[in-house]
Image (cartoon, helix red, strand yellow):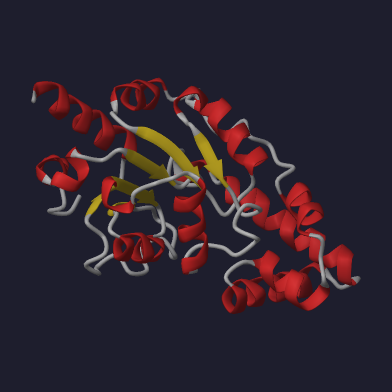
Length: 235
């Protein structure tokens, strides 16, 4: 844990006065150790292999190249192969969600956290709903802004952040963004949001973590929120 602790979070007027909490989904609301992305990642390779009639190994190389060049594999497939995004997303999210456990402590923390809660994900609404149901926290969320709502333009591009705040009438200066990929916090910070980085062991998680746009960080979101709600109740 860094010196960006829960107590400094509670001392932050932007955290205390937040009206909206905007949460990323994958590896943020559930532990990265659930490794759902590994399942999705493998299915992406299978989709490309079948689509282009190439070997799985060749498909994986192309997949990673598109991810680096276009922000998501899907964007690369759309731009280069006119792939139907709905067909791709339905295929790659046909996974086993059983590794995601119910989280009673997170459910309690979200119940005590003042303000509206939203999901902002590069995945789909259906994927988000499946994860939230597994966690047992679906009742706390008032909306899901997904990759389709963003016209298939992924974070960290600026456009979907602006679309999200417009779609859900979020006032950025009264909002908090929670993400496991640090660089995805740059735009929301520039918009006036306070930011929380949920760090993981994935190589891509910490890109940008030392920058000023990361205001708070934790390696355990459930504990961080639980402590924050307890501080609120004491106040």
